[in-house]
Length: 300
Ligand SMILES: NC(=O)c1ccc[n+]([C@@H]2O[C@H](COP(=O)([O-])OP(=O)(O)OC[C@H]3O[C@@H](n4cnc5c(N)ncnc54)[C@H](O)[C@@H]3O)[C@@H](O)[C@H]2O)c1
Image (spheres, helix red, strand yellow):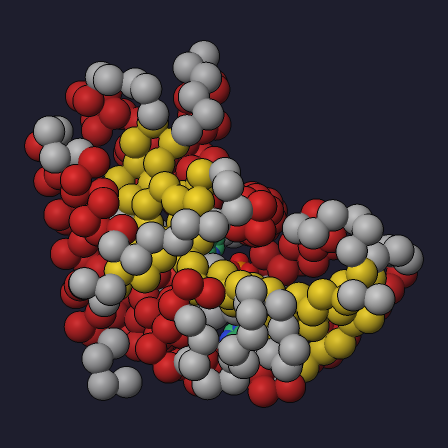
């Protein structure tokens, strides 16, 4: 029997708690899964609690579940690796400190990834674009096996349009998963309302949820991970995702297909909007931010 091995890091965290119970949606219910949960040693007991709950669900697709305090064993034989675990930004911590701390974590994890045909590694832990760069740089896997997630931003954009009665099946996310991200709905030509209203709504949605819930988005992030992976495996549908740009050496989000992973997303984004200076200016800002992040993780 063909069993797929799916790894989730940060298995004891908030997103994972919404994600792991839905993991069969990625391949469909018929597919048997070996689920491997990884977290830091001090969270192993919590991880065991998640394991027990999963067992008690009596899921037909859950062939096996294993817990690890290290990635060496945790990443073995993986078909899909969902890199959710990351150090959170503490009080008074600057973004560049977070970049460095998480950069080191992702560098170490990169060394344990084993090349395998069709391996898919999705980086969710923030700053996800630059963490993905660490994975690309320090692993032996193909850059086409690595993406960073901007699907939550796409879904947030589509939600906003639906609330306004503007049904658009396409919302394209460009650049960094950060407040500089560029979010463009397809087929809506009012550039002023896109840049002044639509984009800020999506850019600020994460902070709005933190203020309301007292915790960052978890269930919606888990839902976005599942959506992202379904699109990636399906191959032919378009979705927003950050892929490696070989010219600029950054992970830059564009609207792609899983079967056609772009290796020059930056150029493609600038070409697409060359006649709209307002969008080009915003693309420049988000690209600059990614280049700066890249410089800050140099020499880690
Ligand atoms: N890309 C996106 O759209 C998106 C959306 C939401 C959240 N996020 C990010 O996802 C990450 C996880 O969010 P959360 O709410 O689950 O956080 P959380 O703090 O609840 O959980 C994080 C877990 O990661 C674990 N962890 C830390 N270092 C680890 C390591 N080296 N190896 C394995 N596990 C490790 C922690 O112990 C913890 O259990 C955060 O970085 C968050 O900013 C990204």
